[in-house]
Length: 260
Image (tube, rainbow, N blue to C red; front, side, top):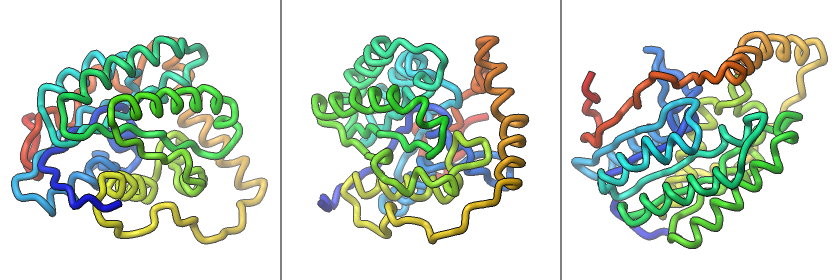
């Protein structure tokens, strides 16, 4: 239902999904669904302000402890919290701790902003997804409970079959393509009660699947460039986001560059 809402500020909190990987821009930076949404909101509201605190590789405990307090202090009209999926992809995860960190973050953010947005994240179809599906669905159940308890909006990307289409996922099989991010931005836009511009759930055009040699070559390239480095970081306790600052740490007018 359209609510004709007015949103003058937006803060995004989370990990690589919200940082914008793999929506790569020509200058080597990432855009992503949160930047796309901010651009559309800014076109509606003069003086619109935007911050993006997300950092790739962050676990929900880090998001709750490092990003949520900063976001709460900004008092924005909209705050989007997306996190926990990195935890479910670890070899071992304590879902009780994941729940506790999510509860802590939501309890802090919900009363501090005009509207909190949570998300059931998309998952790429394939054997890796099947292995982690039970954990992911447990995470999504927690988010549903928290959204109902705290009056947050819940964007259901997981329930949209099109976002499981491998063609909407980058070669690393962990992050959406630019088209995938564009659809997510539209999904959040509509969840905020703003007028739809397209059907973000619409399936892609049918296409013949690649042959066996192509699939095997893609699998080998994926393993060499992405899977093995990812496993190496897990074994050594490192993260791709170690030492990396948020790309937009302050709630500034849209278009203003964050301080260097």
